[in-house]
Amino acid sequence: MKGTVTYQNIEGGFWGIRGDDNVEYLPVNGLPSDVRRDGTRISFEPEPASGISLMMWGRPVNVKRVEAIATNRGERMRNDPAQP
Image (tube, rainbow, N blue to C red; front, top):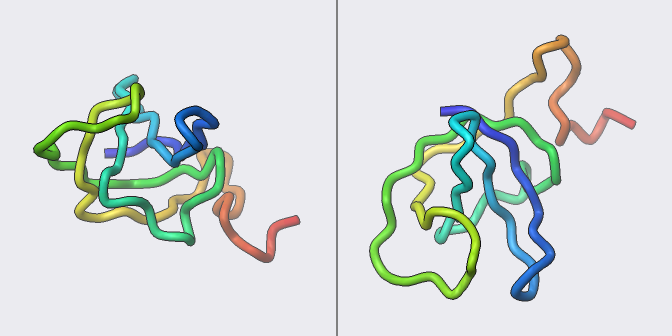
């Protein structure tokens, strides 16, 4: 699955994923630091998370796999430190 990392400045702030399927995902196990940049395009594998979330945003999931991907226009990955 593909999506875009988004920072939500509510409830103290947290990182989420807006999937290309128009679903908002709340990674309860967090995201690795190398993709935690607002707007980073990623490929990820979510699985439903059990329990209750205090965040009033997104579908709680455990992210089993995540990696940054290049954009459609052949640009470098958004989280590439070499990119200005």
